[in-house]
Length: 154
Length: 287
Ligand SMILES: Cc1cc2nc3c(=O)[nH]c(=O)nc-3n(C[C@H](O)[C@H](O)[C@H](O)COP(=O)(O)OP(=O)(O)OC[C@H]3O[C@@H](n4cnc5c(N)ncnc54)[C@H](O)[C@@H]3O)c2cc1C
Ligand code: FES
Ligand code: FES
View (cartoon, rainbow over the protein chains, first blue to last red):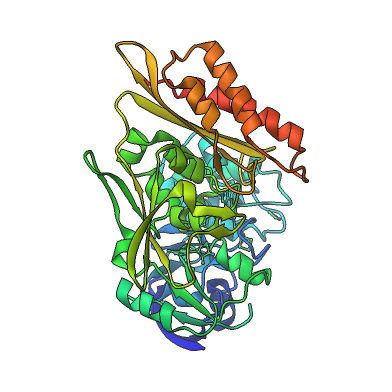
């Protein structure tokens, strides 16, 4: 079954005609060619697919594309403004908070909402906020430092 | 995923109509954090996925001191946890909601989905049981109320009939001078399934200092979440002394029938129930 949907992606309204069984991640990556959102586990455990839906961090691998109908989606591609990196993106570079980079978009989409709600968090609060994001490379300390640095930049 | 049809009816009537007219397997979807994972793993193959999030009744979240708390079936764990009356009047429920998976999972996963999925390990269920929650179910013949205690029939099995939907979960107003706590044991700090979980709720008469009502409910130690009624009876009518709490822990441990699996042996789970019962009781003495 194909279903017509309309939702906003990074501020632009998109009209699509998609299979009801396609995940939002598949729709973003395959139909909209927004490949910044990554598929790690596909089952909610790794957070590589984290996007913002109506301003909340969610796993795009566990949402149907059709469920986004009428809603607002933001992906990593929509985070910088006019070529200026978001403070989190800048801080991840400065703190070397990535190696392979596969987990980075997910961490930034989690941390972004978190900092909007809690602009000066403790280290423990940061660690709890990113518990749904896994990184196989960095050991997390640099990611935590980058989020702390971004909190100061903002 | 294998293909399926999809509907997002805007009213309860239309949703019930779709359910009663469907020929194949229809699965409601709230947050989808259980359902989509199960479809991907091919544990379930619905011919139609029915989104319940557009139904107004499923989005109600309301507290009234005389009526208690209403949690619409699609309300997310994040919204329940951050609703001020929940933290104030049903603290263990807020605690449990914040243990479900990650922030991402809590933002999408609902309390109603946690209940309908009927995992023995469902974290929000022990708190709901300790508050004598009632499931409001709508079906072709109208709506009916089922005490949550009678709702669970086995792992993944509930009192819901194929043509029925959970509409909301009702919690009566909390008793005066009551408090509650939910704790689970997992080998790490976040993102794991409870080896054992215990929710306790106690109310105390401030004049006599005796316990007027005790509720203890256990997760992950039986085919369904269960109440530890003998432990509750040991406390009701007594002062909540260290000895009474210790004995309640022993009774709760004997109430459960855990399995041994990769997460822990049956004996270990019983020991956890004993310790977590004591801890949750000591931490739920009214403030
Ligand atoms: C990574 C990860 C971590 C998790 N961690 C935890 C955890 O720590 N603790 C825990 O308890 N759970 C955990 N879960 C499981 C899950 O997130 C919860 O059970 C969640 O509350 C389910 O809610 P949902 O709205 O997503 O349910 P859905 O997936 O939408 O639905 C669950 C089931 O209920 C049925 N259903 C949904 N709504 C209705 C309705 N209104 N009427 C009738 N049937 C309905 C669906 O058909 C499905 O069978 C985790 C899941 C993942 C993926
Ligand atoms: S790909 Fe979605 S959580 Fe891993
Ligand atoms: S940088 Fe490689 S997984 Fe995180």
